[in-house]
Image: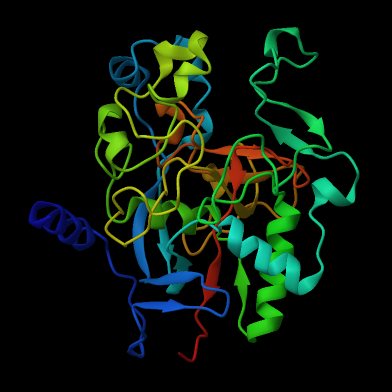
Amino acid sequence: MRVRALFSFLALLTISPAYSDAPARKLPEAIENSIGIKLVLIPEGNFKMGSDEAVESLARGYPQYDLSRFLALGDEAPVHEVHITRRFYLARYEVTVDQFKRFVDASGYQSEAEADGTGGYGYNAHYEPEKSARGDAFEGRSLKYSWRQPGFKQGGDHPVVNVTWNDAAAMSKWLSEKEGRRYRLPTEAEWEYAARAGTQTRYYSGNAPASLPRIANTFDLDAQVNWPRWKEYATPGHDGFVFTAPVGNYAPNAFGLYDMHGNVWEWCADWYGERYYASSPVNDPSGPFSGAVRVRRGGSWHTWPLYVRSSYRNWNTPETRYVLVGFRLLLEVDAKE
């Protein structure tokens, strides 16, 4: 524990502060909101966003992958300086099943999977992806699947899945109105800044995929039992879960955030732009003004190690609901605070 604490302290020291003229008022380092979401204060600061790791280096780190997978990572470049000029609170954990249920019960909201009559995706042990029209790893869309039923057992402390970007935005709006403070999804830059927590390595645990079972629930030797054809891509080791894990089950990063790698993909506020990094502003970038797909980050319980790196960018349409996707909320700090 002492070694982990020292690691976290040293990582925080590497974050360059973003200075302002007026001294910031001291705020609580951690708070809990009206529905039990715990949030931690993330300081303003500067960091290097993205990755320009050479294909040769990636090939050494992930020797089982085809070269084409490394060549497809061009949207992570160029590495560029980003200044996060405003501190904010970020949920310590991903939104859980219980927390989403409190929102639904209190507001009467129907998730898109339920409201549009098409359902979501789920795990079915008898489903054969290779015989499906799309070859998808999971069965769907189907009305038998939604955030209430993803096809595998979840406790109330597991991250909610089968939720769309629009569902996440609706919960943010409801909480904002309920508490009189602005909740929202983090921008892609805020998300990566918070995930890295002062590191520039592939994961906040280092560069080795073998370091992941200590900090993340990914596609590992436990999960590959259900998908043996992808065994060679599995994270080496066992993280203890085949599907989602209870939030906060693994070691946090230096900011005190859990599951920034794995468990579920997390929706971000931004529209996705493949070449956005080339023209991104330095201060508080928030993505393109418009687009067709929204960013999601962090990987999931079914994601290979290459794709849970801090810099990896993923995306999908705002109405996409999937058994691997959830979200985490950000609470803005008022400029006067």
